[in-house]
Amino acid sequence: MARASELLELVGLGGFEDALPAELSGGMQGRVAIARSLLQDPAILLMDEPFAALDALTREDLARELLGIWDRFRKTVLFVTHAIPEAVFLADRVAVMTPRPGHIAGIVPVELPRPRHPSVVDTAAFGAIAARVRALLDTGAGLPPVFPAIEGRR
Image (cartoon, rainbow, N blue to C red):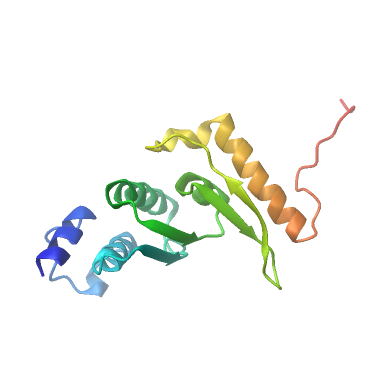
């Protein structure tokens, strides 16, 4: 019980130990899920779109919180998301999967400094990494680029 209370405190939910799920917001439920996943001290955290049902601000808040937890515990995290900016912000490497039949189209290293500050999303380096991920997605799906370069036109 002490470990559970410690983890709830870590994710900002100290004092909500007796709350029922229906009494918690989506963001709070996401925090509980993170705490619950850390309870058994696993070597790897498997997170399949854990923030998908959340609003954008709560999603960003939980992403920052997850980075803080990673910094503290240094767990390997396999994080599945359809959001390119989220993947780039959280990851050290982004594995891009193709549609059916799914296979890895490529792996994009994310060489951004840690700890990650939210302002990193406004940098050219972040944009370049996100563009590489997008290009792999488009290529893997057999699609042309969404915004092809138009050279020689004014």
